[in-house]
Length: 214
Image 1 (cartoon, rainbow, N blue to C red):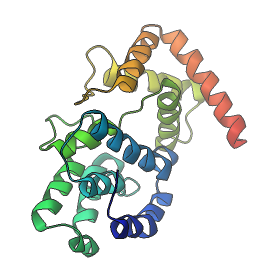
Image 2: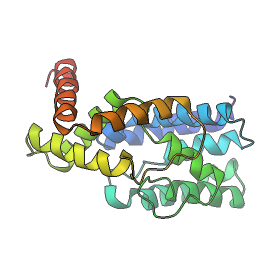
Image 3: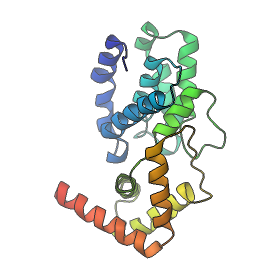
């Protein structure tokens, strides 16, 4: 899927480096994942959308996470909207839609996204493998409380993911996607057994520590 090359170069050279300021769960690897997943959803569901907008929304959606994680969607949207360079690529109306989509992307939002673009980035922002999900939840929990023990972080992860992805969880997914449906089924099965969940996450984190030589 083709994106305006000038836009892509601007974002890669000027926006992507800003993600070095975020903790690992919201760093550039995550952004590139969300960009890729966004285009996967567009393709699989044959969505008639502006690909430059899809790319830009995914690229900016967590840029303000290091400033205030609890309100990062608002901060990230403002950073995007104040970027004068984007006026070269989008009309004012398009920039407003991009801003709203970034504001609406959080899984915990009470209301559904206001546009299809918000639904795309919100859906793409979900993990699609249990291993990636458990690793990411651990690293983010560690960022929130660096003094927490692994056991505390495993218990936190269980509670967080049960509320988010359990049978009555708040996370919504707006499009057909076989990878996500498979992930959700596997994770929900794991969440049925707290001890098994903790042991599984422990194995993933021990491997992560070996890889990173922590």
